[in-house]
Amino acid sequence: MDWDDIIKIGLGHCGFNPILLNQMTFDEFNAAVKGKREMLEAEQREEWERIRWQTCILLQPHIKKGTNLTEQKLRRFPWEQNINTSGGPTLEQIEASRERILKRDGKIR
Image (cartoon, rainbow, N blue to C red; front, side, top):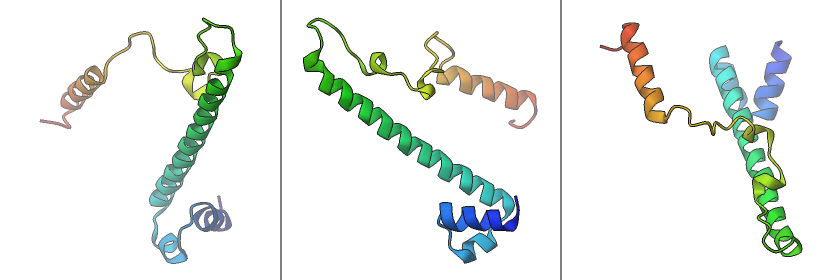
């Protein structure tokens, strides 16, 4: 990536002002670009899920009585394919494991 690419991304895609862009470190720039990309992806996911929900509602009167049409039955999105429904660890279990590892490595007393 050269300076022209950084300017295009920083000023064009992320909307930074030139002064801010010049004052950023490369790590700050990468973090800001990553945050902007994640925000845009989340917005697009919300739009797709809203369209799927609306389509499901619109189809309800036209399907056979007793048929249970859900949004996920209508269409599963790629980001929903990896949802853990196998009863994996809870958030508390993950946090406890994290604490044990940090204590083991001497990062927490």
